[in-house]
Image 1 (cartoon, rainbow, N blue to C red):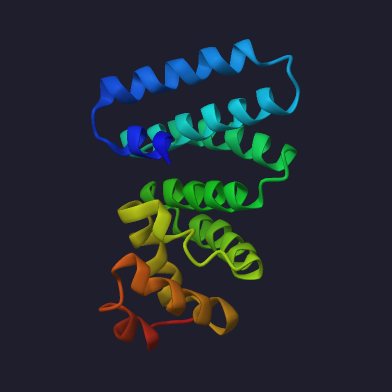
Image 2 (tube, rainbow, N blue to C red):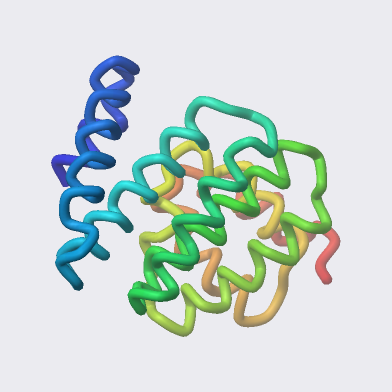
Length: 168
């Protein structure tokens, strides 16, 4: 929680300092097994979150992929789903809607199966365009899950209009 507050605080020097401290801590603990792996994951997550907040291009995909590999290795399914959604957001920002739909839809299935109702909301405003795109193009179980999640995103006013939109 402290990390999330520091990263989302909007003060880039504080965020950069926090990421640098995490990098140093991860390096110091690299040979200490589980503790080192957890710190490395937290560092990678911080880098991915910062990249998503600061860039609109594919530059942050590498940060996301690095963090996702660590999340998979550590068995951290929630973080894996969050990072998949972040990847979909990057693709959507780059106007690759079909790729965003494929990645986002698969992540949504994992979130639904894992009961991760807050995973979209925890991404904040960055997730709203992806959630709206998915709402327009999904049906069945994905659609039902999105309808549960949309109020948490502040997108409930768009849900009725999206219900009749083209579904796949």
